[in-house]
Length: 173
Length: 372
Image (cartoon, rainbow over all chains, first blue to last red; front, side, top):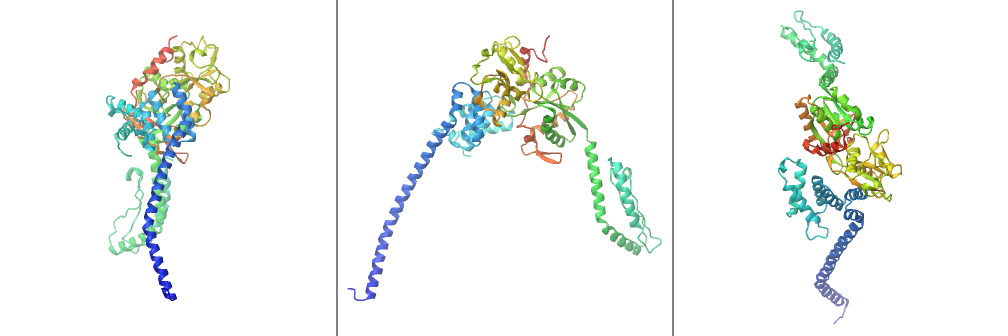
């Protein structure tokens, strides 16, 4: 069937077209699987990151948690201050400080600290998050809102409480 | 330089300039112009009228004169601008000098130098906002009442115990309470000991050496004295001895004194512990907080009974409006007021918030309830 160079060239072109068509039909499937693999990998990465963050938090703030358990709140607050020198923007420090200040009778300052922490990481008001501090934040907000004449409080205090209330209700940043 | 002196100086220069100006030859003999400089009394406060043209009957001559005058005038515009600026500057200086002056008595926290450095920017800010000249006067704590009695201050800035003393004895009016540190407008006193010293509770202080801060310090003396009394320790009889360090920076001295073994325990304001920890001067791993007193108001602005209520209101409004971005000029430098004054803001607390201090002062037998 192949008699000359032209015929051979035509056969080569035909084979190349058929091969390309077959390859194209398979290509989306392979891409899809790669994408699926990538998504799975990303999810795994995120899960690992979350777990790593929890471990880091546990290790970093263990001395503070220990002091809190011993009832040494002022000492815990100072230890937290010392740790914050190295990690000034860690939202967990704000949340812990909020818990401590709330327990030490400074609700306005606690609300401010909670608000700063939640602004940095919304997971603290998410009831499904392993880092959730929703119960502690809710207690503070409810206690502050139930106070008589909250309108006489400074505006910043009201703003923090309203912000936390909105985040607890599912509002976004 | 007063406005009159300034005017005379500027006017002398202007007169010489105007004299040259009016020597322009004018062809029409009937037409003449003259110039006068009006003193402030005639022309209004600090203003002066450089030229005044008297009747010029002939329109041609008038035009000619005006052309020459205009030409001469334009060639001297820079002089006019300089003159105007000089007068404006003098007038503004005079306005600043003309404003009423009031003294704010600032109780020394650590020493006079630090107090002035801290509160000068705030004082300038208040002067700008209130529209008066406030002068910052650093005052030793123990002299404060005497100088206050002499009517020296229109506004006072003191610790909360001294505020209670002035309130009870002279009826000062609360303006605003300063916010600083984690507890905002409130703070507390604490008793500390070196970690591992075996002192972990108030009763462990029996027979030990203790250092207090200044005697009129609510969170460096009063609160801790009260804590010990409530914990069954009488500082006068149950301690080996107690002392108050001499000189400035007493709060830091007592804290370092514990860490370096000079004292077994100390009365430490939690704000100082917080600031020293934040600054990396101390580590909470090195000491234990044996006990902590209740939260009580921090430093306080107040006004004597005789101070104009309008002035008091303006000061309060200015303090409450203070933002981290507000600046004031000090020694030719524009500085952030809150940062340089170590202030996080102000809060208007009711006087009843100071009842905790009153109760402590009664229990500890301290002013203004001291009985001999």
